[in-house]
Image (cartoon, rainbow, N blue to C red; front, side, top):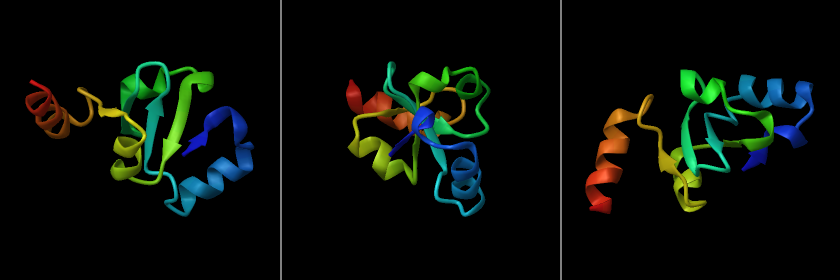
Amino acid sequence: MWRHRELESGELHQKLKQHEILFAGNTQLKIYGRLTCSSGKRMLKSNRVFFVDEQEAIAQGYRPCGHCMKPAYKKWKDAAI
């Protein structure tokens, strides 16, 4: 997991280009989603973290985004009930 505010711009672009970062999460809400999510794009840099994959996000206690990851969110929600 990488915090957005701790990555230099060049380092962030390199990780994105090399597909080391595939998901982003919100530290305040403990939600993760795709990098293309419109909800995630509005997130403050101070709250944003990046993950290599979904397993890493889940291991850190994050749940799927209900906007960009509807099937995973539904599965998570059904399991939580």
